[in-house]
Length: 206
Image (tube, rainbow, N blue to C red; front, side, top):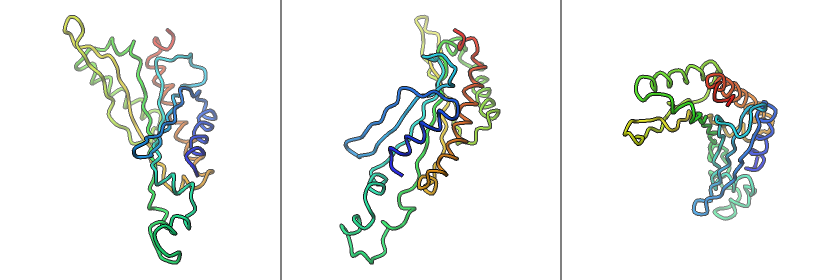
């Protein structure tokens, strides 16, 4: 499948999972010719703009673009005879892609958290919420932005919880398999957003 097809399936399955998508971007790096797709999402019934959201993204390198837009025979003709065995004919030569997800935490709630033990407790609680949502991704440690205020006291001004899922090439080659995989992933994302929303309930009502 092509880059545009994968992005389209991701958006469609997000809606099917009860997520509202917005702030979509598709960019091209003119030096490496890699492409990056990103989109924000929240549960359908949440207000917009929301203080809490998830950003979904994936990168698509130039080899994957060539593979999905050019026939193998045309690529091989540039380098060798048609009957010669080569890497161009091996499916695993192009690898997988990573679906990266970042849960952005509400600033208005984080600024109330004291730097120190309270922040460590919050990080543990966030990981527990991910477990309750049955998140089966590669979950990274929550990260926080801490800066001094006018009184030189450290304050939390931002935070996020990153994770990612690897989408194997055999899945990317078959739309039905990709749809099934994304149904599971996006369902987990929706459950975790709802869990985080309950945790930050006073923020979500504001």
